[in-house]
Length: 345
Figure (cartoon, rainbow, N blue to C red):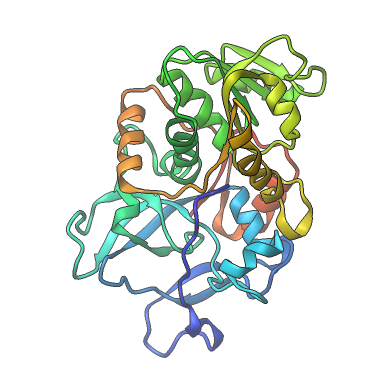
């Protein structure tokens, strides 16, 4: 599951910008639906609150979480994101750019700093972000590369380190290894000195190998749960294997971490499988768990150190300009993405 987005009030969008008000271009959705509900328009520029930073966005990441918020699926998520329409009509969380203004209580950043992290409505020329969800951009990354990092890399890091409690030498299986989170998970597991097997489709196996995976499994031809290998840690990112299959692939005391997943219908999405894992786990020797990630400055800084040490590198499939966000979302929906899609501003 992607890190949580936070509500940003854009009530002024209803009537457009006031005369003389600073404006910006942004992608906006006023209803839930397919990519067609997204449109480019001119809206008021946001003003940072006390602990917020205003960023001139140079690039923004697109992930599966954006698809869920655009569609309003699963329906259960609308309790947080708006029952009938999005509370925040500007999609996007990942961002990289330059600080242009800071709130009165901000101490970590100054105007001109190049930053990356998670913001509110990053599919726009400007976006606000909490200072505790930002970090200085790694010096060896472009803005486009940096924008691919925050949500996906933090999800991978927290899934392996916190929920998975990874240890050096453990055999790790990453299901969904070619996607945004998976591409970081493979590299991070290697950085934690663990041998990694990545599960992906035939066309994406080379991409997973290039990330450093020790072994790959083509899920169209092989079954990771056939008993040939057992794993100490499984990170199931966007798959749909049953809990029984995950358990067959685990060692007797292994851990399976479930995050994301599309099975379960429009009401709960993948949550039914995750909740089932939590209910079953206390009664078996294996550990089945889930987590909800949240971008933090500390984790961004840890990732930045790994990136600058060249142990982790963003994998970008394609970039799209801001006006083509609907096309970018359709490309993501097609299921052919290797790594991340990035929006350039």
